[in-house]
Image (tube, rainbow, N blue to C red; front, side, top):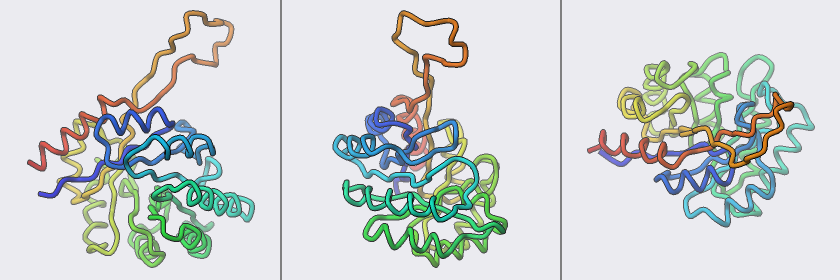
Length: 245
């Protein structure tokens, strides 16, 4: 069986480097993990591109919330894609819906065209669409290389059967990448049940602050943070490789 590709969702450059160390095949770089991800800063993208030896994809999402975007959001996304091209990124991760829950074909087509030679992943806006089989055909028509999805469910394990149906429908016309809720304990089983050859996980863990001084009055500001853990990535890689062997 061919080696399955492991993409790690990384919420910082440090997370991306930890993912690379742990054996990730590709990075999706973003900011604001708690908000579901938004486009990272210029500095983050530039330093990640300089430091990483593996492919770097960047999330193009101007704000948290829904995936129905206005003209201002669209202009921001187009400029962010141009920025990613200028910095030498390998791909971008896009997605938009209209008010009825269908793929916003006009906007997404403009985003794909702006990406030019970069690979394009359609992100989990897909899971918010009202009709996944129809949405898949729309995404294929846009020319995206893959779609990231949990099968419209809270996590990819629950959505494995739907993922399998999407893989069958795609029939090689587009990659279907399983993501959401994957860990070392379930990633191999989800890959086997769904037939997905690309898997997406965050491998996150709490990073403890090295500060010895803390202002206890700042109860809403934790000194700790969440980041990708190299050991978690290595465990994901090992689980996939063991199943493939």
